[in-house]
Length: 350
Image: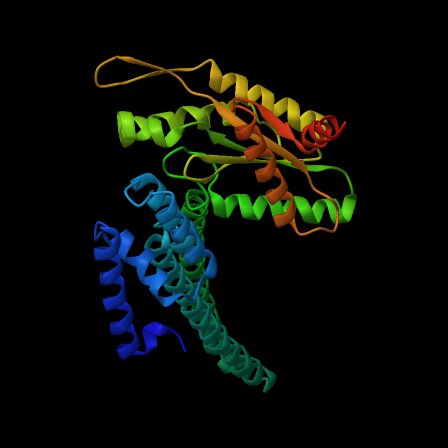
């Protein structure tokens, strides 16, 4: 049984949510309420971990970050649109079924008319032939009219279903995009990376994961404000999008973190892609739109890891993340891979 099926439990969780708002000075928006109600319910361990992380990193006032969390765990606001189209499609199917049912009844009636006519004609009563034939002609004409109406109704219904199918596909695609940057979102990343893993299992080949994080983003955000921070994220997203192609998938992973799925890509080539992205970001200048003031450059640290066939993909992502943080420790604005870390450790040991 879920917590929303137990009113008393839901009240307790609601009170706990309000206590959390007071404890962490959280703005009581609908988005925040849903996030923290889920936290209080503690039915999603990953959500609890992410919100604990947000508390530790003081990101509770970062609107973009919290909206991203909400999108990951509660969808991207497309549910109502999908529900509406689902209802429309259901109505079309029901109408379609009624049309076919009516056509079946008409066909059955016409069949009975033909059977009666055949019986009458079989008696050899010439005097009745004219009457029977006239009746058949009338029934056939009526059937032709009904079939024309049926054809029109079926064409209309088919056209409406095609429109609904197109709208549903558009909403589905929108639900896989990050609303701020236009890149794929976390849900889309999860789908694509799992597809890539299945492909490696079936066909072999390489698969690499690249993770990038904007250097000193929190300081930049705190200094210039969230609107400028969002501008930075959009600019970085453009650099990711402009330097990935084909079957590669660039996604916003969360907050100021970005990730790329690189199917059929060796680790050497993945490092090259990471360097291209890093360089593209480094060469950009941030200009405050409201004043035209140049705020300087931003940099990006990146980590690259190769998927080992058979391992959980989470392990690959964790290794890429470890490489990312190695790049941070090494001075930021650089790319680190598993190979780089191994070489560094060997050099230190010698």
